Amino acid sequence: MADKDSNWRKILQALRLSRKPPKPYSLEELISAKTRGKAEVSERLEVSETLMARSELLYRMEPLIFSGVNKLTRRITGTRIFLSGPSEEENQKALEFLKTSGFLSLLPLLVKDAFIYGFGVAEKVRDPELHFVQIYPINFDYQREGNKIKMEGKKIAGFRVRLSDGSEETLKPEDVVIIRFYALGEFCLGLSPIEAAFKSAWIKLNLEESVGEALFRHGYPIFYFSVGDKESPIWKEVTPQHIKDAKDIIPSLDSVSELILPWWIKLNKVEPGGVGDTTGLLEFLSMEILAALEMPKAFGTQTRGLGGRAVEEMDFEKTIIAMQQELKRQIEEQVLIPYYKENNFKTKPELNFVEYAPELQNASLRRLAAYAKHGLITRTDDLENELRKREGFLPKKKKKKEQLTSCIFGLGECPIRQEEDMPLDKLAAFCNICPIRQEKEAKIKNGATKDDSQREG
Image (cartoon, rainbow, N blue to C red; front, side, top):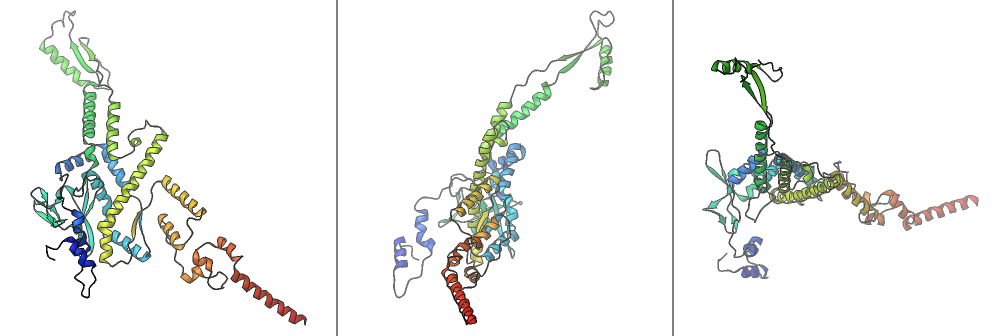
C-alpha cells in the first residue's frame, strides 16, 4: 500500500465495485487513522517500582490492608463461574480450557496482585499446550525508547521482563494477560488502591508503635529503693558497702514474692503518667484505609447500627459485581476470544460469575418469579438449563425437536407447543379447546354410534 494513498482513497477503493476488485484492506487499516488520530501517544503515569514495593510492604504490615485485600480477592474470585452460549459442547470445552491451562487457579493471585501492585500479569506459554505463568509486577514494564513507550505504528511494541540475573526478556502483547481495576489512561498499567491509603496507614502504624512503647515505658509504676535513714545513728551515713549490701538483696526479689526488706531499705514508686486517648484517631485512620479499598466501614468498627451496616454490605456487594464485570471483560478479551479464534469456535461462550450474597440471590429469584408470573418469560429447556447452571445443578438433557412440538395425544404437530414450550398443567387448558382433538373425538364418537345402530338392527 503506497504511503501517498489517503484513508478516504482506501475506503473508496474498498467499496467500489469493479470486475477486478482490488486487494481488500483489513479493518485495522481502514480505521487506523480514527483510532489514534494525530495526538501523540502519552503515558500519564510511569511504572514506579518504589510505589509498588511500598504497597507490598504495607500489605505485609498493616492488618486492615492485609485483610481488606484478601477479602476483596476472595469475594471477586471465590464464587463459582460458568460459561453460557448456544452450544453446550463449546461451553464445556471453554471451561475445560480455563481449568487445564491453569488460568482459573492463577486468577486469584492475579487479582490480588492487581490490588497490591496496581496490576496482575501472566505470560501465555506454549510447550506445546497453552498454559499461564505469573510474572512479578515489579519486574514488568513496557518496552521503552528512553523514557517513552516503544511503538510499532499505532500499537505498542511489547513488554520487557527483568530476570533474576539482571538480563531482560521481551514479550509480545498477544502473549501477555494484564488484569487491572484502576487506571489513568490507556497506557497506564494500573493503580493500586493501597497508594491512596499510604499516608493514613503509615501514620496508623507509627501511632500504634508509639502507644505501645509509651505503655511499656510509662504504663506501669517505676519502683525505687531508699537505703538508710537520717534518724538512725547506725545507717545515717550510707557507705559503698551499704549500697552493695542493698543491691545483693533487691535482685533476689521477684514479682510473685512478698517484699521482705531490712528496715534500712524502703520501697517507693513513681506513679505513671497518662498516654492519652488515641482510640478516636485510630478509628478515623482505619476508616480512611477502608475508604481507599472501597470496603464497608462496618468491616473496621462495631460502633455502627445494624441498619447502616446492612446498607453498607449491600453497597459492597454491588461494588463486587461491578469489579467482576470488569474482570470478565478483560478475561474474555485477552484469554477466551483468542482461544475461540484459534480453535474455530462457532459460538462465543460468555463467562459468568454466580452471585455470592444470599440477599442478591433472593432478589434475583424474586425477579424471575415475577417475570414468570406475568408472562415475561416462559419455560424452555434452554432457560431451564441456564438457571440450573446458575444454581450449580447438572444441565437437563435436551429433548428432540419433534418431542417438544408434537401433540401429547399423538395427533401430530401441536401449534401451541410450536410457539411456546410450556408445562402440562398450563397446556391442559389449550388441549380442552383444541380443534384437532375435538374433531378426532367427534369422529370416534360418530363411529361408536354407527356401530351401536348396526348391532341394534
